Image (cartoon, rainbow, N blue to C red):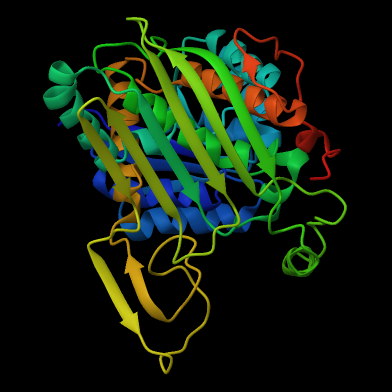
Length: 411
């Protein structure tokens, strides 16, 4: 039997619950530790790991204690965006001082709230021998991976490389109040979800034989708006839902964003990414869509075209929940069901890749350098939206902080 990777989770909220669930389908790893500033959340995540049979983790009282646990080989970071720098600084300090021995760190998207923070993250991790993985689940979605493999094997060699990728992620809004806070989160839906859409599209447009840096960004044009949640009744609903912690009358963030990114391929071809994201989509649930278009072919992915659905009449009533699919918006009618969300959304394949690479001592394919590249495009998107113009690359975005992230944007 080969070695098993001991995973320590930093943060015990929505994202790390998905990661724990996905580990049922991942070999050669165990959840060995959990730390969260909220003790009850840490206990609940540890309990979930035990219930699913993916580990018997210790709940640690501090991050330093988690790093020092000899059973922990790697960390999965899914803390609030405003704490990322401090968390990584503490981990790096512990590693450098010999308090713990780690192989690598996997960090949830987005890597940081702005380009300066992303570069700080890179500098910190590169000051150590640690491997690093960027947890962008959508580039590991089985339908995306399989579709790309088919297109680049069967179609592109005959008809030429694809030239347009479209990606969209839409739902009715985040789970936790901090996501709605532009300062803490670093923006609104653009920072929260367009990071997914852009990276999935870039992945589809990149040949399997090319590095992630092969496509060069030339221009970015974007638009942001608050279409729903600044309307009086919905702003009041948010305030009521979160006990006044979210005030969209005073400090809104965008709930809609779209971007167009022009890239240049190694052969000189022009490529385009069209990305759309929304917290103002009201449909059955979370909707993920992707398209890849080329000279003689097309690919399409839609997460709501599920192979399972149920119908519940109006006499079948119940409390609100998300037991059929993430961001479920109704409890009656014709309901799509995603039978294995952790698998369909890419978490299983993502974590299988990270575990295998960490155990083999090899840098993951999707790493913090990709997170930095995504952050740069996101900042260009915000700058384009604020200034109403196309941003040409290379662009000086080092000191740029979006108005939404400063709390000064008013929609």
